[in-house]
Length: 184
Image 1 (cartoon, helix red, strand yellow):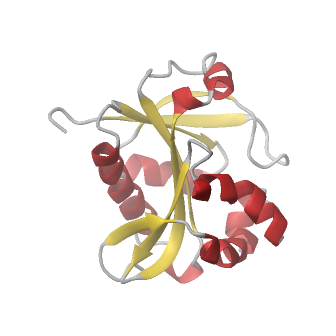
Image 2 (cartoon, helix red, strand yellow; image 1 turned 90 degrees about the vertical axis):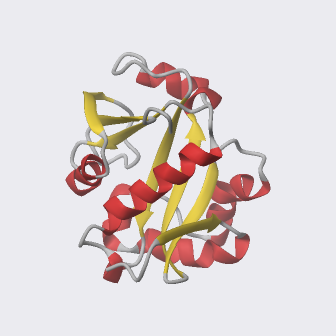
């Protein structure tokens, strides 16, 4: 359960052991196929921390306590990803995409994912005034994830084959979209 509003701060190297612990949580590990050695965490997240990768990675906090991780990026910054998505869904040219997890098991449930997503999208509209949409593909089997998107206001706009994050999964994905609100 959440202990107050959801806030965000940039990921730092000091946070990598925490992220490594989260990535070994069974529910997270099921959908995020990441290595968790210090070297692997540095390779995966170091460029984002340094600003040399166009993606941003932030921690989600409640009551000052980190409980989740969110990543956002302009889809257009990754042309190979636009190519992969194009046969499945029309990609708005100024769209963002996000990845996310709740690492602390005691925070899961009760709407925490929905609250985190809604707060992060609101923060993303402010941080990226040119962005007109957030487009999020999710493995079709990860029902809790795409349901949290729906509860946060996203609409399912496509279903189709994409490369899964975890190689044990089939390619089936659900793609959800949230357009920037008028005047937002």
